[in-house]
Figure 1 (cartoon, rainbow, N blue to C red):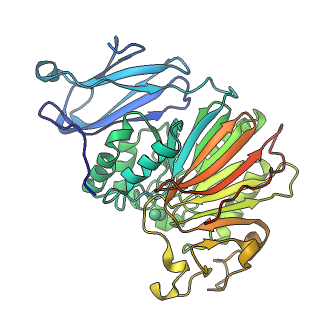
Figure 2: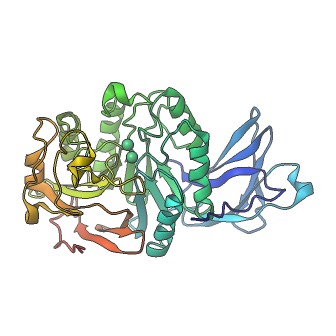
Figure 3: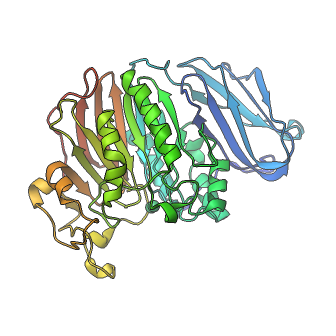
Amino acid sequence: MNIDYGWRGPGDFRRWGPYLSFGNSAATEMRVSWQSKFHSMTQWIQYGETKDCPLRCDEDVFPTCMHSFSLTSLKPNTRYYYRISRPEDLQVEPQPVYSFMTGPPDGSPVPFEFSIAGDIHASGGNARALFTSIRTNAPKAHFVVTAGDCVDHGGHEERWNEFFWELVPFSSEFILMNATGNHDTDHAETYAHFINTFHHPYVNPKKGAYYHFIYGNAVFIVLDSTNAGQTAATQGVVSDEQMEWLEKVLNLYALKDYWIFLFMHHPMYTTGDTGMMDIYELAYRDLFDNHHVDGVFFGHDHHFEVFWVGKDQPWGGTHYCLVGNGGGNLGLFNMDPKLQPKPPNYLWKGRTYIYERDGLLGGNVEKGIRNDAIVTSSHVYGIMEYGFTHFVINGDQCEMRMWGLQNQLYFHDAFNRTGHGKSFHKPLHRQEF
Ligand SMILES: [Fe+2]
Ligand SMILES: [Fe+2]
């Protein structure tokens, strides 16, 4: 694929960006970041509600290539224009004017849309193909949450270059919120690179890239299952600090009756290559059940799969969604055991797996890797296709769709919530190919 890496003429000091992210509140805070080609002392951003960008925010830092401005006290539901610059450019040529929208007031039940893209592993144009599909099939998506593994190797600068260059047509207007993946942050050095690239409202970045943000009547909780680059030591289970913080946030927003969506890279439930380690269920399940978490999203395995756990509970249960089908090579081990040295955990018959249709699928019966009880009680749908997952939230209603790169609608589900927790689902509207 020929990739247009965007406007990088003589007056362009950028290497990447600009790119956008929310602060703790999508309504009032926006962060604008970019990387410059060379270290520089002073750069600034102009912004405002009109295209002449009358307000200005200066940066006063040590020489750096990574520039990031937090614009605060913004008005909800408002379009802002912005322009990044540095003193020399006043003599070269004016920089382009971009724009973004702030989110609705915190707690407001207005309709909104967002998308999730896991395991993009940007390479050879796949990130651009994915975001092109988002723009085409979900043009109202205000923001995108990535579920880790945006790149193959977080320590290789060229991999991040590729990620951001592929996002050139999108990053100045899409808001990106990110979770760490093992490929992004497999040790302390790559973790440092990650948090210097994605300036999210981290609680304690020394312990991990965990944070939350509010959008309308939903709270988005992002865990760092690499624990600040220590994945191997922790097997992807978050530290005590994160668990204690998570419980506080869940307590707060369950009481406020928000939608609760939670993201982490390592999967709790999957019939893919990683398997289902008991330790995840032991660590999280009671907490999520007790706080009526609505959706938990993870990647790491490279396919799409949905488990509806606790559907018999009065509060409606939790959707656990594996969304690792954003671009990294699909987990074909499930379909062809010859591709890996040991038998797969579950052996898919084809590119889809549906427990109701297929029953329990054979494979490795190693204890602690399979969780047949969850599959039997909760499996909804699995497919080996690239794509992204899109959500339309309208008050207490949620619609979820998984779109492919060639605009195929692979999966469609709808569920409601009433009071403290969801009601039982409306019938599923699955489209199976
Ligand atoms: Fe991955
Ligand atoms: Fe991963």
